[in-house]
Image (tube, rainbow, N blue to C red; front, side):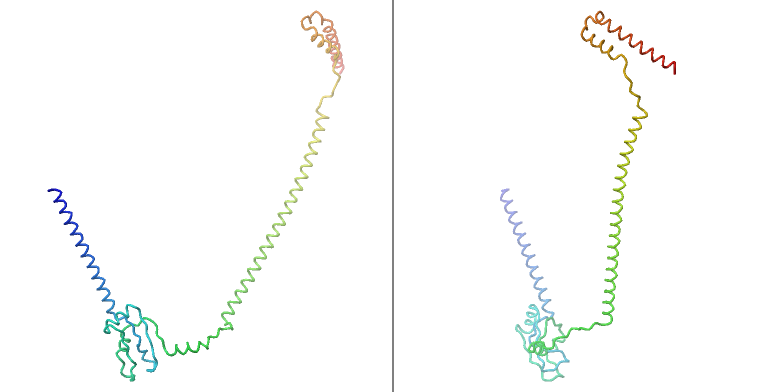
Length: 258
């Protein structure tokens, strides 16, 4: 029973939704039809044999072409077909088509006899372009020429200044390189002179080292007799001591005399 009740409820809801959708669709269709009827009631139609303006001659044919919806509207108002109205022979009594043309706004283009004549003649009389310049145009052209001359002079001056600046920079670079080269040479000469002065003035004179042979004999003896050096190298040590004492005595004597 529960499933049957549920099924019935679903069917009823679906049917209700479908009816509501159909109602909305019908309402939209009615609104569209109403809008089309209002638009067609404006009278924007196709007038294939419309009259020209009141200032033109009665014998001048004219033709007006409107939009597609306007043509349908004109057909509905005219009885379902296109209405052709011959031009009236009397200029004082306008025809119904002329009255409707005056009352209704026209959207499209008109073909007149003047246009047909021009099409037949091929527009033989073409407009001639102006070859002479007016005073204002001449003034503007003169100002433009002066502006170009001033700009060219300014550009030439800027190029000359840039060239001069480049030349000065190149000359300065050459002078700087020459100064650096001179400085390097002077630095080398100063260093050589400094080494010469230091070697001559601040270096102790070389003198003969005293007791060289005795010292060498002691060293050789100690190398050969390392284990019994005290016994076998006594004579060499005594000789070196006597030589050193003698040399020291001579130095003291010279210092005392000085």
